Length: 227
Length: 248
Image (tube, rainbow over all chains, first blue to last red; front, side, top):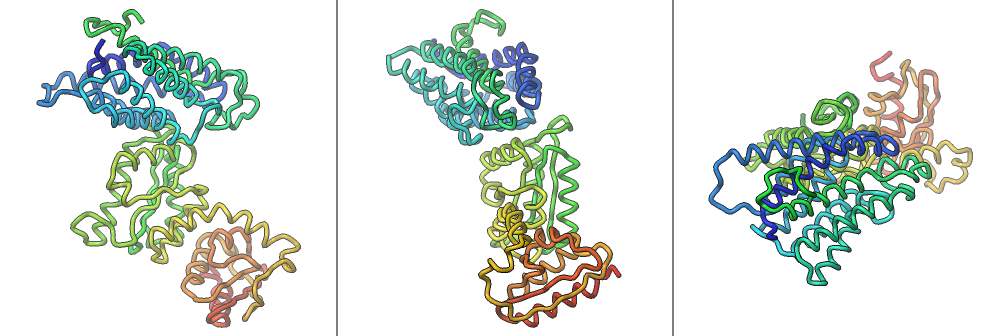
């Protein structure tokens, strides 16, 4: 499996589908411990991303080969412009930093790790959050750790993405008993325990979509195909 | 508009941004103050595009005033940005990360939204440079502690300040007293004077501390000063208060 700009586009389109499907779940999670707009905001943001990808696809291709970073940069600026809540600049910065380290037509397993590391660095520096504060950083950090381990074991692109996606999913679930100390949920203090962090859950969706896009391959046109 | 530093106030709410800009602008008529708020759909939230547009527009205005061909504000000039809650601050940071020109000329303060905007506006009105305006906004968070200390019963004995070289007790004559506009007038005047002036123990160069005195008509205020031209400073400030700021 080659991870190229087409993979990045499939990743993003699958993310949009996953976010739309989980819209009510994310909003409900956010209603319990935040301001109840995470599902709506993410859905609006990724719908706008898909619209811009469709626009770009309708344009004649440029002379230069499209890079993975080109796709991620488009996601970054679109999310920052359209999401409206804190997740806009947080995810936007994650994709922006990831784009900066993936300005190539194809990325190999170490480069996938670099992309995830850059995204984590973007989220944590923008949000001034660290692990254990019940935020999306928990999911991103777990994904990076697992991806690094998989790449160190000479894993393939798919192995690295699978490790990241599974770790992010577990980490999101693991935020349930945590007490939030960053973000809107921190205003609730102890009462934030017992609820999953919506940002950690959406991070798991994003990384799950990255794996699904790699497994589906370029032949699959249906973004709702096997995940 | 003659001040070289402009303010951009970013809120989740368009109305809050507009109101804060109106309030700060009223106290510092020479300063360009713009509010920007609300999400991409017009509801509560923040819009990167709107923030970028406002920053670019304000920078263009400053550059035009500076007459600079390269689109830069005058030396020491620029934009100080204040945000209210989480995503306003994050979105401003993202806007600055996306655009090197904005990052060069605009800086984000870490300050209470209203108090910081007012303090920054009054400082900018005096012609201060960007670093000084930023410092003024950032210092506004300390005003609550400063007022608490000045109003505590022990403040009189605990003070280690040098004895005043001039002092006078005056009575507030205008009905609304030291509200926003008069407080801005006094603090701006004090900033021009060389002396260090206090009114009822609070720093008279701080518009926020003056407003927090809540001094209305009939209240007696103790004006004291130390340093160069202390006696003259006391006389100037006392006369301003006694003249009622044109409101009597």
